[in-house]
Image (cartoon, rainbow over all chains, first blue to last red; front, side):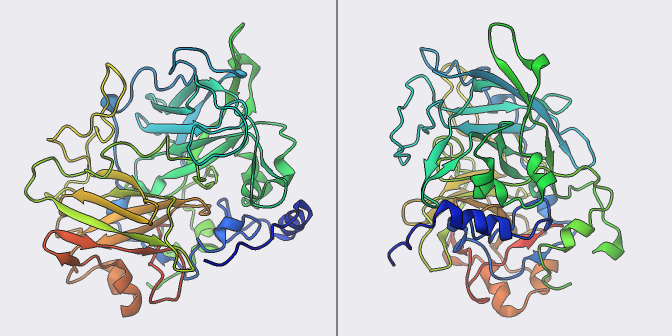
Length: 251
Length: 203
């Protein structure tokens, strides 16, 4: 294997982020150069359009009561003791692009602990592990598409995309819709994080309005007295489902 | 219908989809303690004589194996049903551990990580002739937005997707049997047209 290229500076990355043309679409361009790992991991060929109403991907996997336990949505109660950090609740609704709730479907989250360390063997950031925090949660949405997790606020952490690269605090989300085409993996950020301007992963979404949709709202009414701070993160799944048809001329 | 750019068309063809979507972000490198689950690739009910193995490797644009990709699978049941069933992640209510599927229902869904050599394998039931493919969704560190592809276990006489592809591209979607009951499907994220896997845009 070739030796890895020398790390860019933050100034190099800032310049590349500033040079990126905004407004491509709501999702990142898979070949977004400031995120270095994307270089060899995005297709060069055009994607093949599938507009077949019989495509299996217009249906999707389902989950149910057997797939989650009552403790899965509370990441602060998965060990004998309480994890360190600022306790938060994160809640929101999952809908499709027509605003219809995604009911009784699986939501998965994972995150670093309050010190910015993942409970993953390959995370070698020299921050402490927390024996009372794994950072993995699951739940099913309710009949209105709502989900809720209790957890702790994750810390920022360094990575090696470039010199002095730091990820803003975030929670990873994985979502299923009614169709496999609506699958989504994303990251939720916290409002007002000073690391936003420096992060090429957040900025891979070049449309500022779309980028704002990745940032949760702090909602004081969702904070619980003497217990937790409340955030709302609503999620809208893209992609067609079996019930959706596109006018012929737009194909 | 030919291959079409993924970007540019997807924004104009929104039809009656009016609410702007939440953008995708990469799965990152540290999902391994969160998303994969025990027996995630064991779609076939234990002991089902129809079961087959589908396996392969994931490669990057330099031809190197990708050791941190996560693959998901979705398919119709052998009888053509597309409703799936809950229970892919069936849990033990006593200790929370994953019990695995119940041995009766075919959930149609699987999830596995690549190993350190970029290899993955699932054990599943043959999809029906009406849709003779396993839908595959690829996530990876370095991949900002997941990619869809299909592994065709049998080459259908007619298929809207395959028939629209030139022969050298079409071949990347075929998962022929290496030996009875073992099908091979390698995924190349980036490369020349005869090497890079065909990825799909559902609009």
